[in-house]
Structures are given as structure tokens and as C-alpha cells.
Image (tube, rainbow, N blue to C red; front, side, top):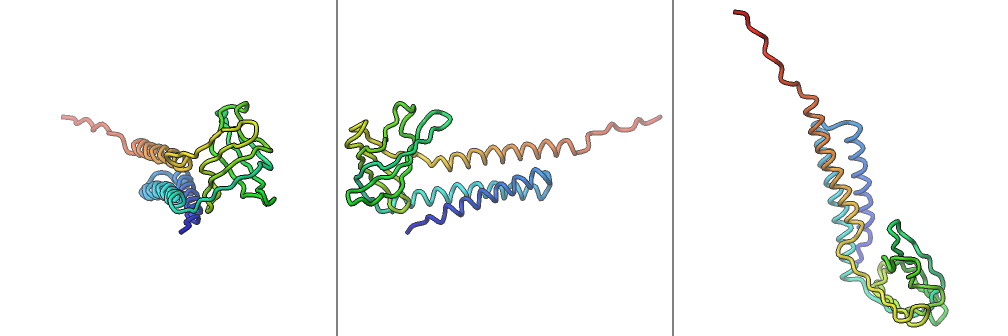
Length: 194
């Protein structure tokens, strides 16, 4: 069963987390602020969980298909760190176009760019979301090149979970500090006259 709709639930949870974060920033850390902090944490956990469930379900149950064709277009995306991910489409023997594919990092420098227009590639991909699992270059500028998708945990989960963790810890520490500053300090006892 395709659970692609869980990605939208995950996006809604991220939006909910942002809402509770800004409510904490605007209204402070009071009794209702603790409920907002709990809601923020739950939204972050649910965002990561639903994304991971959808991704692992697709990884496990999506049918696979192999396609061989010529690259009709390719667009490289270079990250700030310099790694390259490709977006491309193939023309199959009958002249039809394949689905559009996007890869994770395939190279660390532009000089190592593996996929070029006119290359003949074989792609094994998941049909539910068109994610390429393996790519083999049969003819082209780098024949014999092989790509295999490998993820320990989806980067989305790492980014939302990591940022969320620091937001919750920061809000918790900020609330504790504001609570200490607002509490009455120990006042000196009045001197008694004897």
C-alpha cells in the first residue's frame, strides 16, 4: 500500500511545530507555555515518524522497474559543500520519455560530474516515487560508472529532528532562565530592635 500521503502529514506537523515555536516566542514560558513546548516536541516527533514510515514503507513495498535509455536532459545541483546531485530524464527505445529522476550526491566536484546528455544509462527505480536505486552508465563520458542509493536515515528526519531538538532544549532552558529571573529573590529579613 502506497503511503505517499504521509509526507503531507509530515509537512503539516512541521507547520504545527513552527506555530507552537512562535507562540512560545510571543507569549513566553508560562503554564500554557509548557503545553506549547510539549506540543512543539510532539509535532517534531510526529513529523520525523510519519516521514520515516512513508519512506521505509516505499522502500520495502514499492515495485521496481529497470529502464535503459539515453539521457535527454540533465541538471546538476551543487550544494554549498560542493557535492553534486543530478536531475535527469531518459528517452527509451520507443521514443517515449522516462519519469524524471533525482539522485542524492553523485560526485564531490563538478569535474567528476558523471551524468551527461547523450549517455546511455540503465536505471533501477521505485515506481511509486521514481527514486533511482541504482544507475549504471553503459555508454558515454564515464562508461562503467555505477551509482547505488544508500541512506542510513533520511536527511529530512535528521534535519527536522536535529533542529527540533535544539529548539526544544533552547525553549526549555530559556523558560527556566526566565522563570528564575521572574521569581522574587530572597529578601533580607528586617532587623529586630531589642
